[in-house]
Length: 214
Image 1: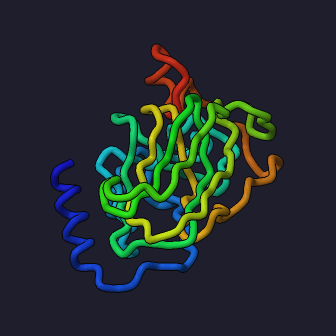
Image 2 (image 1 turned 135 degrees about the horizontal axis):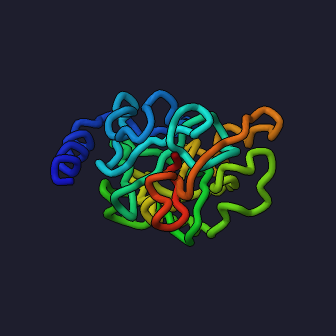
């Protein structure tokens, strides 16, 4: 965690370009199942904390116990921590949004300093909604993804994704807009998902419902 903080601070000091007003969406495709997101988007000035992982849907060979994700077939979650920090060195303006699925209430906060510091620009309160109104992919326990977003004034440089380990997942994280990029897929376009009891699954069956699957 200390190395992450130093790296992010150095990136902020080096970032001479103006804050971005462009709409950018992260869909986490190509990172791999339960691999750290880390510096995958560093070319865009975006770095995630060490416990932030990508998770691939079980129907595509991963261990994700979810369905109806807004963009196939990978989401972001955290397994060994109850939050994830995203640092955006150059900063961004206008708005922030994403899709989420969660079995617990949670909060995501937008800050004008790195590592969730400085002034709080806005907070998004998440509901426990992971099974609400699910259609089309019933065997993925976390089958409801809701869109949420916020407009804010100022320049944001970090996001604190709150939640519960293995109980909250995110997708299509969007900078510069209060409306997340992408759309919820048509139910008929998705295969049935055989998953376990969590955003992770079989390994978690002896615990409680979680985001990772078998």
